[in-house]
Image 1: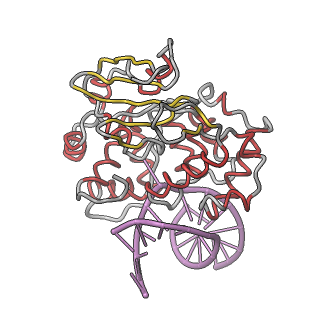
Image 2: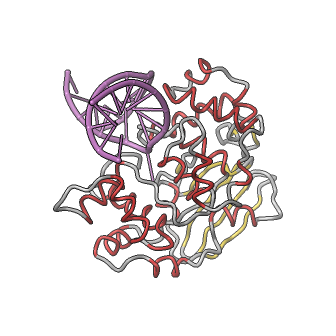
Image 3: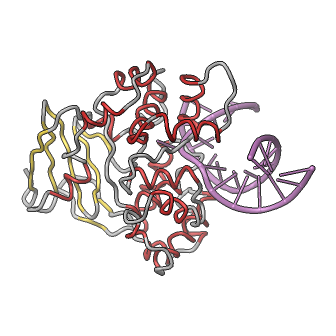
Length: 291
DNA sequence: TACCAGGAGAGCG
DNA sequence: CGCTCTCATGGT
């Protein structure tokens, strides 16, 4: 083990690390010899799952692991989440297909910026754009010897200094002005992301949607993946397809109608149910979109 | 080649 | 409200 690295072992049950890190909620993890390497905050992290445990390793010694445990949602009562799902055939099949899929608790800014870049992009491409963005604008951080250079996700201030043309060089296309304007709103203090978790869900959602490039879907992603609002229900093309095929196969339903259905039908952990439906639809035909 | 991707925003009736 | 068009870019 390289000098400076430290390890911690988390005991877990019903935790599918691979499904969790490859399910399109985060974009900075890569698989490496049976383990996962990624950046959490300003730290290089390697995660390895064995029977009943996840072993975490950092490049720089770490004494307090509660931040990483929170990111991984180690302490979540997962049985309770499963028990709150509707008892129907589609959910049973979705859970059976990827039991142990979890939701992470991400940094709000990284999550917001990442999903502004996600619109009408495949997950592989989102990963590429974000990797470029981090290399060019993020701080270089310590990685073990022999590992590729590692970079933190760029802060709002770091991105606010860029120009739209420079951001477009990261292959983000028409999303560049949206990311730039949102970075400037956060960097200037005009928009306070730190209060995301304090407001009621509807208030937080309306606030997020005032940001350029943030509509209902991306706002819901930030609420669910970073804000801790487990009832948020992002509706993207896959989830829309899931609802149409699995719940309304015989008649046409509008997006509005599906939204109203989802708001009550899936219960207090609707966002969790949504992630299962999303992952189920993407993987059930062994598609290559992002895996 | 044609179509699609974890959408949003603007214009229109 | 609901519909349509456009916005880059790359994968399949």
